[in-house]
Image (cartoon, rainbow, N blue to C red; front, side, top):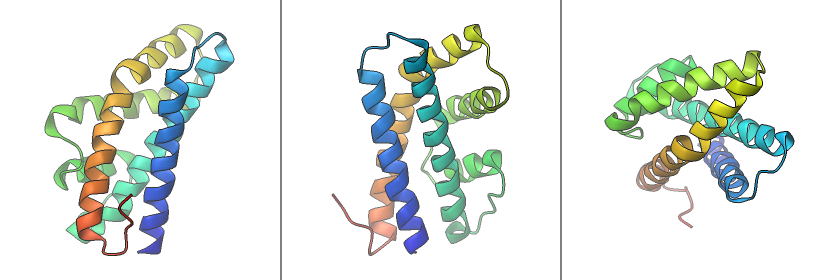
Length: 140
């Protein structure tokens, strides 16, 4: 239980940093790279949190894709956001293995325009459900 609570806290903190970063002016490639890295951290923490919650629902989530599927089945990911989450997985994989300026520009735009709002909505759903399912999870 404490492990899941720590995951939720880390996830919230990572998302708050990402959200803060996208509100600041981006004037250098370093700024853009920082936002992309914050996206990667946030994505990783989301799928790992889904992975930890999956067994409570009788689901196996041993890979990022399986964890996203579990997130959908558990009701944390909205059906209309499924394609966006799969695109996030693809982008996370691309940023982990290759750096190309054009690709970075495209991913940056998706992070700011599409991914942050989906992260926000999903985090709200996760926190709301966690409050009802985890008696010791602090509501703040």
